[in-house]
Length: 189
Image (cartoon, rainbow, N blue to C red; front, side, top):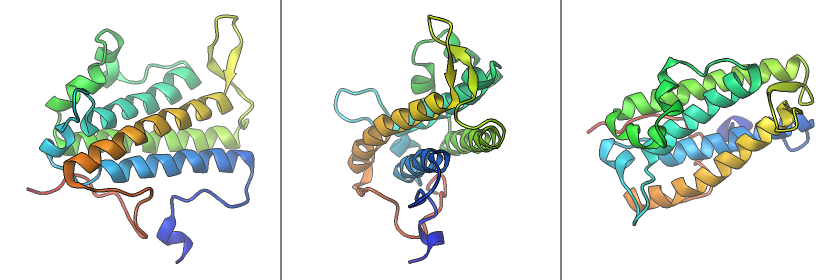
């Protein structure tokens, strides 16, 4: 077993920033593994009375990544693609049914790539204590640490949902991807 076999693992001994970024990346990776290699039917599958789907979760978490690092961190628009989310409740979850698997995987992969680059640059230029654009009702600005912790919480919640959804689709279970796993995208029909 080498480090590259489990590239998503956080460091065993690192700085606070390395541990938080590592924990976030491990959750991102586990979520992506749970959602990986599905066709449109798999990404649209529901469990019981819940409206959640893996496709909806991919799109929702892509929005959360862009919103966190563009709007909350920098005070910028998260991008034109997300405009309907501002006015249509649960748009990210429901509109995913209209997107192809390739579009959903590319959307999430792109959002995470942008977020990782932004976080890496921000950690190098100010660290976790730097204030972000977003502020609370009292006007106090959130720290970057708060945004990273909020993302960890968001992924923890939705990775649990993904566990249940994926098991219902094709029986995939497990806490972590297998050694050497890499994201693939849509299953070819």
